[in-house]
Length: 190
Image (cartoon, rainbow, N blue to C red; front, side):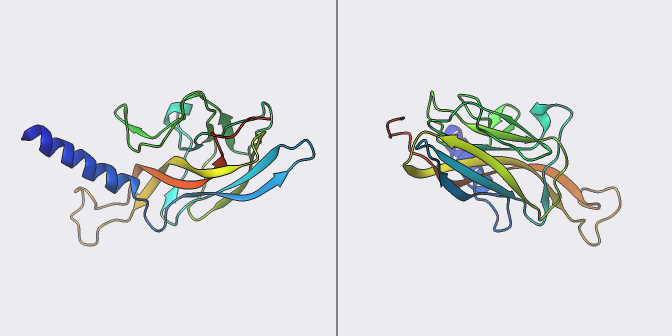
């Protein structure tokens, strides 16, 4: 009985965490260019919500980031990042965690590159950042996924006694997951 209740509670928490608020960070594909060699260059934009920022951390492991999963056919050396961002690509994409456990559960296909951009400078709330690009040899698209770890700011609770939780503005790490077009991992790489 307790195991079942724990499973239901974890499922409900997972739904609450993965359901992005209406005003949450979004990663968008703003343009896809077909190159003369037959490859495709994806242009991405990151837009923060009105109550969230992206913050660098004491290390890459503690900084806020965004990950695009399953970018099949990635052409080495083609990824570009705007100022204030570091790029990395791992077989298993960087996913927001809490105490070592994933906070969202994206579909991450083994042996497929993932694109992770990590903030190295603060990004203000309500900001759109352009200039993220990556090139693939794949010309077909499928619905893909992204995740992000952001810093969400909650306003102080009116009338809360000083020194109690909520008496001052609070910042907390939040996990988001969403959809965007990505290269089809079912396609043949040219």
